[in-house]
Length: 537
Image (tube, rainbow, N blue to C red; front, side):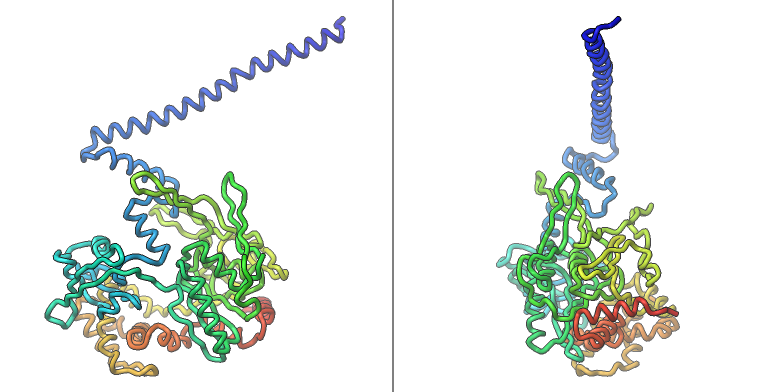
């Protein structure tokens, strides 16, 4: 017979024995885990030693460690996580900031020459009369024929206030054109222009979220309001994003103080919620946002926030779906690691990031392309609710309230575009040279002349562009459009070119039509609901 005391001691002993048996297992797990880590560390060390000592080409330690670091980053299979060299970091900062010390040109390689593709307004390059198509021949005293675009760009950039001498070769001018520039802070505008379209609807293209995007957009909206704008079309098509704070404050121009703009959720950290901190510039002016498959990142934060709060009607096609947060970590030697650390979510809880898969060639593609999206396929996506109870769609990216696909090229036009694509740089340079010659012959309401198309063909063939007469003539409508738009830009600027092309822009036309049918933002949503419910052919 066992007494209660003995029973208690017996249970204690069994528990002690069980614990004693478990401890070696736990300890063994730690030993096994540590051993696995040690083996992996030895593997890396052995590989690096063999490469350092036996690889056919000599690599110093700095090169070896950088390659190892880049290999690790590459194997994460995240296109947005990258190891930035000091030069790459400098370029990254210049691009995201929208400012740099230079002379204000976009350049590209054409037939072995680094050639000016675009001259930015209010820059030393514009002031000196630099033109698109000019070739850069000499920088200071060095011939640059054969240099890469990066080498030329690095030589032209520098501390604002310093000087650089450049010699240009211009088609039709025998002697080199020498120019001495004083480098300056170059600002690439976020809002290149803002115009009033027919029926008093304002149109504003927002190209990027640089450090002055909110200021530029605010001024543009106020200017259009002072001119009597009854509604605003904000064009985010092709806007790739930029500075986060600017995307948040741009949203605040139209959202009331305290409304959520977006939230950020990462691993091992508390979610961060960002809210509008000021009163809006306009809380009720009818607003339509245009977007397409190249609207990404900051564009999607703005569109998602305004859609969820019933502040804007989204028109166009589904956006890109880049809802990842990158954090830049400074490293030794001037390097930096730009690494994905979190994801963005709209106020209704939709993830902006769209699922993609890595293809064997290293390209990332959408799992479900939206180029042929319809009302039926849209309804298959996860459904969320806006503040007013409207259905908004999840599944990654921002799905528009009104789907409007852009006009597609005809088969002959597409065939011509494909034939010209490998010769694109020569084509663009020849196109610009001819447009510049026609500049003095046209007025803002000019009518395109078919003879211009034939003269362009003669110049293209003389420049070495290989395209047969038959496909060129079959794709005439696309050639006419490209040349007509280029003439308008060169002669009168981007805003005039836009006015002339409105009739060919199906998405912009739909936005104008919708604004004409509804006086308030709620009217626009009601129209969108009726369009979605209407039977389709």
